[in-house]
Image (cartoon, rainbow, N blue to C red; front, side, top):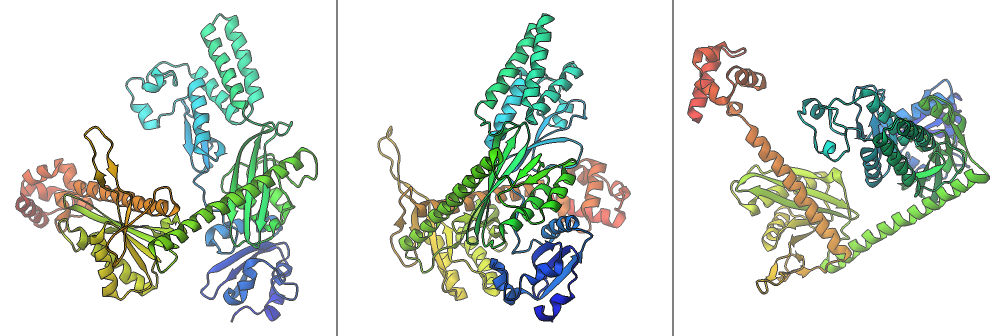
Length: 614
C-alpha cells in the first residue's frame, strides 16, 4: 500500500538514521538523514509542510518511505553519502565526478619518484596535491617543477627500458636517473622540496633553499648555489599573482551561495597558506532544498569523494547537522577540522567574496543558457521548423574504400552535447560504397526503435546534401513519422578558385530542407550556424574515431578466428606452438594434433580450412 502520512509516520522511530523515499516501481527518489527520523519525515506533510520543489511532487511519486537506523547523527551522515552514491536519487543534490578535478601525485617511497597528473586520489600511500580546477594552472605548476626541481616525468615502463637520456635531460629538466649515476640523496631532497612547494609551505621552502644556497656557496659549489637561487626566484615569482587574503598560514575552503527559486549556484574558494589559489563553481537546478541541507550534503559528498580536507571550512549559514559534519571531516583528514560561520573579520570578508563569485557564476551560466536558447529559436525561425529543436540528432557515415563502413549518431539537448545519446552503428546490410543505402539502414534501425519506445528527437540532421535528405524523408514516409523535422547539412564548397595565386573563395554552410529547391545558407558567426556546425563536426569526429577502431580491429583478426571449434584459448595455443598463422598452415597434422586442446579431428578441420583460405 502507498505511504499514508496519517498512519505511517507514527510508526517511524525517533532514532537517528537515514530515510529513503521510493516510487511505485521501487526507484529511490530521495535520500535524507536526521537526528530524529519521525520529526524529519513529518516535516514533509501537514499544515506546515516543506516548501521544497520536489515535496509538491510527492503525491504523484511517493509510494513508500524506508528508514535505516544508526547509532548517532555522524553515522547517519556517512550512510547518507553511501546511499546517495548508490541510488543517485533524482531529487537529491547531485555531485557527479567532475573530470575538471585534477591532482598531482608523488609517491616518495619508490627509488626515483615522479610527478603524475591523476583524476582521483586513492588511498595508496602516495602524496596528492590539489584539486587543480583548470588544466592551464596545472600545466604552469608542472612547468615550474620540471624547470627548477628536475623530477622525472616518464612512466615506469619507459624509465626501466631507456638506454640513453631523453630530451628532458638534454634541456636540463631531468637529471637522467634512468641511465646516469645520479645521487639518490640529492634527488630525494629535490622530491621533498617539491612536496613543500605543492603543499603551499612556501616560506619554509624558501628558508630551506636559502640555507642550502649559502652552504653551497661556502663550499665553493657555485653551480649548485646558482640553482638554489633560481629555485627561490621561481617560487617568489609564482607567488606574486596570488592574492594574500588572510594573514594566518592555514588552508581554508570558503563557500558562497546564490539562488533564485529552484536555481542555485555554489562557489568554493580555495585558500592555501593564507593565499587564494583557486575557485570552483557548481550549478544546481530544481533545488528547493534549504541552504543548510545543500551545504551539509555537498560537503559530505565532495570531501568523501577524495578531495583534500582543509584546516577550516567556512560556510555562509550553519550546515544541517554541522557537529556531525565537523566530526566526519576530521575523520577523513585524520586530525581536527573547524567548520564555522564567521560573522566578522577576515573570515566574513572571504565569505562575502565567495558569495559574489557565486552570484557572478549564476548569471554567467544563465547568460550561456540564454545564448543557446536564442540560437535554437533563431534556428527554428531560419529553417522554418515545426518544432523548437531542443533535442537534435545528427547522423554521419564513415567509410574508406568500401571497407569497415560505420555510422555515428550524436545528440544535442538545449544546444549542448549529451553523451548518453551518442551511438555507433556497424553497417550490416549494405555492401560497397552505397552511402545512401547505408544512411537508410541506420535511420530505419534508429527510428523503428524510436517509434516502439516513443523516443524521437525534435530534429534530425543528416550529413550531406539533397541525396541524403531524400533518403531521410523517404524513411519518414515509410515509417509514417510526422512531427519530427529533418534537414540535410552540406559543407561549404569552392565557388571561385580565382587566380592561381589568389585566395580560394568558399560558400557558406548549406542547409537543405524537404521540398525546397535551393538550400538555406547560414551566415557565419551566428548562434544557429555554431550549433549546426558543432553538431555536424562532432558527428563526423565520432564516426571517424569508431571507423578507425573497427578497421584496426579487423586488421588484427586472424584467419584462425573463422574456423569452427577454434576459440581464443586454442588460437593462442596454436600461435604459441607455431609462431604465426603461416607456421600453423605449414605444420603437419600430427604436430597440430599434439597441441594442447586440439586432437586429430580438430587438427584436420584446421588444416583443411587454412589450405582452402590459401
